Length: 255
Image (cartoon, rainbow, N blue to C red; front, side, top):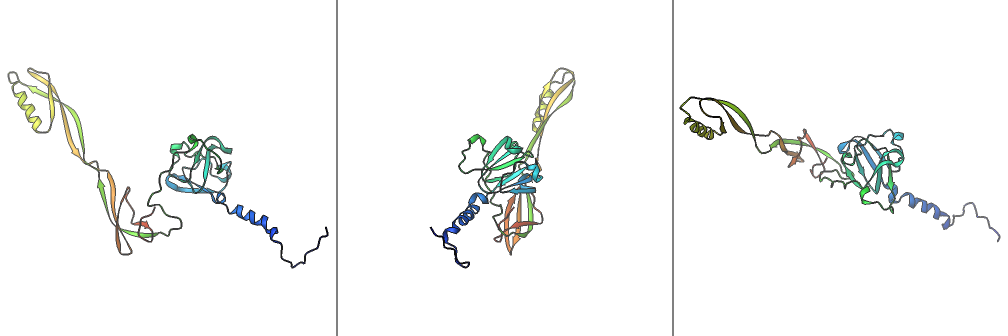
């Protein structure tokens, strides 16, 4: 068959673009967007390291045995405490893991790789399910503002009773043992429970149980008020805030 050369300005045929279009679709597929982020401290604090591909040795990226918390954005990832996916490994589902301590991997992660979509994983290989996201967690791309804290009130837990036992020497005079019941009755009225040890004249020992009610002094939570765009807001926090609180444009608190 005779081949007819194309003019230099001729438009390429449609089929010539198909391989390139297929490659572009592959590069933009969901697995290519999958990523996992490790943090050096618990609760996603400290230096971080993000990867979208397998890392067989964390020494190569200067992050070996450093991870304490992790966020899996997409797909499933296998993390191991030895290089080249050796040693103890667990599979992480998408979600946020504030600590790797319960998995036995705190400061021990040395390699990571994404699990293929069609791979079947035994249940025992999965890490415990990540906790549900906090309603205060920042949404993707959400702009944050600083709101001034106007008041903070620590709410202390319920009062506690503290009791102890003391030993007391009791001096008794001969012929006056009949006063002992009266002494014990007075002790009961005074809030001291005790009993007599020994008898007769001379000295005896009495065990006395004393109690007092005190505040435990530990706040259960902090009742916090803050103002944003001339609107007063009130929340309860597990720790004391600073002078400001991070909020979104609607005044909702964010971490």
